[in-house]
Image 1 (cartoon, rainbow, N blue to C red):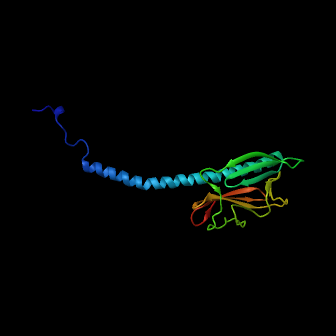
Image 2 (cartoon, rainbow, N blue to C red):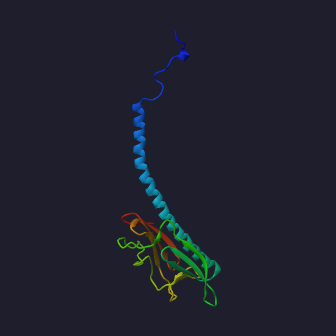
Image 3 (tube, helix red, strand yellow):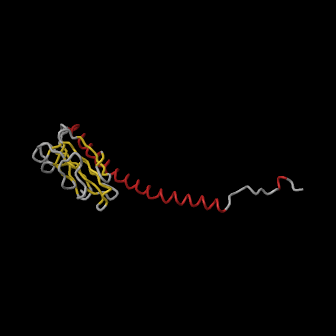
Length: 189
C-alpha cells in the first residue's frame, strides 16, 4: 500500500489545451488593447499641447491685468509662442515668457476642417479679426495693433494627421479662452 502523501494527483496543473486557450485569449486582448492604447497616448499628447497654449495665454492675460501693462502675443512658426511686456513709456518689448509645443504639434490649420463654432473667420493657423500684433491690455481685453478689440483663433495639429487638430479661441472684450478638440466630424469644447 502506498502512503497517501506519496500518491501522484492527476488533477493538479493545466492541460496543454487549456494553456493554449489562455495564450490565445491574451494574444487577442493584446491585439485589441495595443492600438487603443497608442491612440489614447496620441490623443493625450495632442490635448497636452492644447493645455499648454491655453495656460500660457491665460497667464499672459492675468499678468497684463495684475501688472497694469500691455502684454503682446507673438506666434513664432512652427511651434513657439512668446509673450512680451510693452514697457512704458518707451514702448520697447521685454520678452517675459516663451513656450514651445511638444510632440510634433505646430501652429497649423487643416484646410479640410471648418472653423470652430465661435467662427471668427479663421483662414490660417492664427487668425485675428484685426491687424497683428495682438496684445492683452491692463483691463484684460485683447486688442490689435490699431488699438481695437479683436477676437482670434489659434489652430494646432500635426500636418497630415487631422485627428490632432485642436484650437483655442479668444474673445477680445473679456480675454476669455475656449479650447476646442476636433473629433472627426465636429469640434468639441
